[in-house]
Length: 405
Image (cartoon, rainbow, N blue to C red; front, side, top):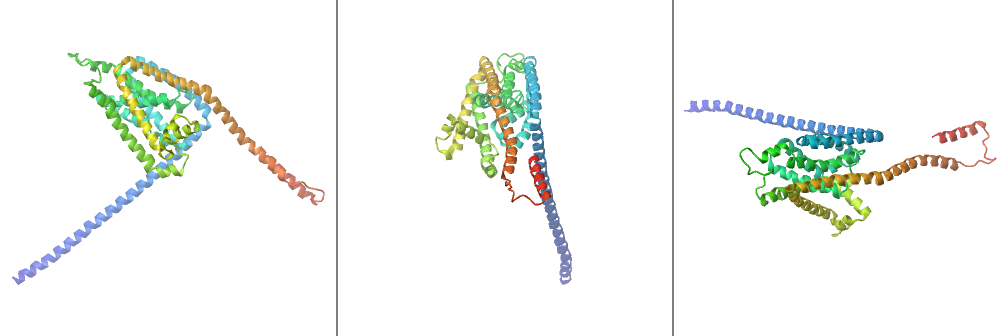
C-alpha cells in the first residue's frame, strides 16, 4: 500500500504541474488577447478622430470655395432649380408613381451637401431637427416598406402635419438662386407631394383598392374604424415625435451642452429662433417668456409640442378628403412661392447693400491708417533738419513704403 501511495503521489505531482502550466498559458493568452483588443480599439479611435478631422477640413475647404464663386453658383442653382422643378411637375402628371424615387435621390444627394455647408457655418446641429428625423423615416418607408399601410399613415401624419405647416408658419421661401433656401423648401414640400400621389394617384394604390373578385376594399390604406384612423394618424406619430424630442434634448442640452456654451457661434434651432424673436420682440418671444427668462427653453419645447399636436390632428380630415388635400397642396406651393417673391424684392436688395457696405468698410480703414501714420510723423523745424542728406532720403523712402503698404 505504501508503494502504491508513493507511486500515486509521484503521478499526481506532474499532473498538478501540467495543470498549473496550462492554466498559466490560458491566462497569458487571455492577457495577450485583451492587450490586442485594447490596441485595436485605440487604433480605431485614432483613425476615427483622424477621419473626422479630414472630413471637417474638407467640408470647410469646399464651403470656402463655394463662397468664392457665389455668384456663379447662384446662377447655376437658379437654372437647375427651375428646370428641375418643371421636370418634377411634368413627372407628377405623367408618372406619379415615380415621384418617390426622385424624392429619395434628392435626399441622398442634397442632405450630405447641406451637412458640409452647415458644418462650415457651425449650423450642423440643425440637422438634428424634426424635419430630418422625419425625412429619414420617410426613406425607410419608401425604400424598405412601401406596402405597409400603418407605416404609411405615420409618415403621412409627419409629412402633412408638422413638416407641411412649418413651411407656412416659418415662412420658407422658394428662391431658385439660393441652394440653401431651395433645399429647405423641398425638404418640407416634397414628402407631402409624394404621399399625396401614393394616397390618390398611384396606379398600384388603385389596384389595391379593388382586388379582383371583391369590392369591399374602397381605399388604401384601408381604414377599419375611426379608432384605427386616429391611432395611426395621431397617437402613434405623437409617440414617435416624443421619442425624437427626448433624444434631441439629451443630445443638445445634456451631452453637447458644454460644447455649445464654449462656442456661442454654434447655432441650434432654439438659439436662432430666440435670437430672431428677441430682436423682433414678437408674439413668440412674449409667449416664451411667460414663465420667466430661465424657463424659455421649456416654453419653447411646450409651444413646439402644441404646434405638433394641432398639426397632426389636422391630418385626419386631409387624409379623408381628396378635395381638401388638393387645396392644401396648392396652399403650400403658393405660400412658398409668395415668400420667395418677398425675399427677392424686399430682403435680397438689403443684403446686397449690406455686403457693399462691408466691402467699403474693409477698404476704408486701410486708407485711414495710412493718413494717420503720416499725420503722426513729427513736423521738422530747421533746427531738427538732419545734418546728413542720406538720413533725409531714408526718411522719405520709409514714408513712401508706408503709403504703398
